[in-house]
Image (tube, rainbow, N blue to C red; front, side, top):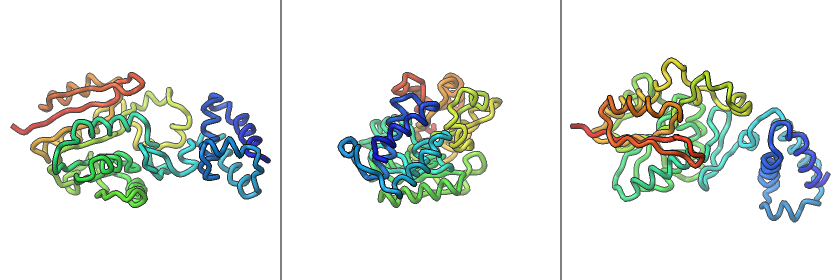
Length: 285
């Protein structure tokens, strides 16, 4: 079987789950990564015969993709800015809107000195690692409740040669026991999807990505934001929060933070036009 023949067959088998262009792009990513080809090389070598070992790997990968497994989990890695990030089903797949959150933090704080930054709910560590890459002279700590996620994040720090302090900690229950401030900036992409919203989500997210990092109960959808806001107040004199958010909960989130004394609260849209991130400042009086 040639590369071209595999590509065509794979597209036919994936078209039930994905649009044609998306299916082809996923297949090309698979081929480029496994064969160590650039896009140009893949096109130039499309008539090359795949050997038996290559075919075995590619058909196993295709079978996983046919069942909805995201290409990042099939490969065991994702890309965030120009960082290679190891991922598995204990970590969320990094997304473009999270890159926007990191850009916002960097743009507003590039010229500040000696900051202590905390990333809460770090997962794969992508936010903390990108911040360390762009703000290399600042101390960055990253926490997560999942020991498995912390293990992956530590591997990613080693892989990308970036110095991060990782701590296993539950922001909902006495986080100050392990997370010692003060912090100048707290960044988080906490669980914010209400369980009632799961019916509108794609199968490959529901079946494979960790629900612990995705969902909150409908009755208290801001519980993580409240915990983070309180932790920041109790552990810092002056702190800026940057967090991803559910576009449907922006007004509630803004009101909650204002009631706690935060000011300069800004809600920002992502590249898709959705209200996806917020910034708020706390200054002790």
